[in-house]
Length: 387
Image (tube, rainbow, N blue to C red):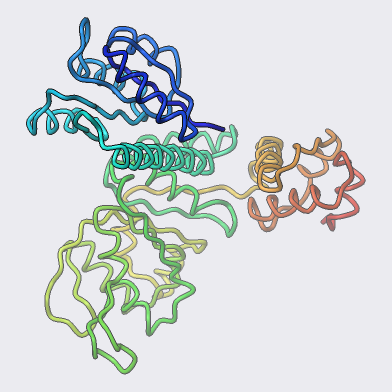
């Protein structure tokens, strides 16, 4: 689809020249004879780019720019003027103009500027779309008592820097809770760095978390920045914290107490500004009693405790989750949402979900792939081993 450009200039000859050149380049051109008409068009229509003169009757270009910033802030705005100077150009860019071009405009520079402006708009639009998709993917689905309590807790704790300890079985969505807390926090523009403590060998966990200096051990051929440093200004999510070695626990405790870390093989203390969220499927107090987890670290991590219930303990949420996954999977496969019978939903509510949310998502995807036009109770019984 051709891109649309609005040309705002009180000189007819300039409008005609720009319209002719840009139309030849494949753009659709609309014109406005002054700033007031241009502002009206901007409010009523969407444009891929706006070219605007500065000196005009009724409303000058900088005033039109203010209208753009208020009503269409993502639309690139390029000022064109024969009366400008460096100060005017600087002021225009400070107020949000994409660029400033003097009259008579150099054709090549004008076209390059327009294309760069449109490319930037596309990137901004794509980024917003991706953020919207990510944010939607972080929704906590469910209205059961357990989920309502979790959502209330997240809303209260997210804006703070309090450490959070998330507990629950595998597959219940502990990582989703951590991501949701980060997304709603004041650190959302910073990084969210995840570490699966169970997946890293005990002899490497210290290097993974704190980094190491070149030559600090045999395979340390270059300096490495650890997860604490990477997460500075954001959030560090320590998943499966219950599987961390006692030695590494001691160093994590020190980092939390002092807000400083030291790389393996290094001597310099490095300040880190990190919010720590931890998660585990273990009973940490049992681990403490078994001398496998430090009590002082437990208290440091567990300022706020969030327990995510198993899917078997929140069966009322299953219809909503099924609907959510059906929509999500249909988008992934670029196909219409496959309907499901009420009897099939009831059968899924009665299933023993040992794998929790993760298992439910996999089962719904299996049913979408293997069933015909509609998911029936018979499909559930045929493609899922009932327990």
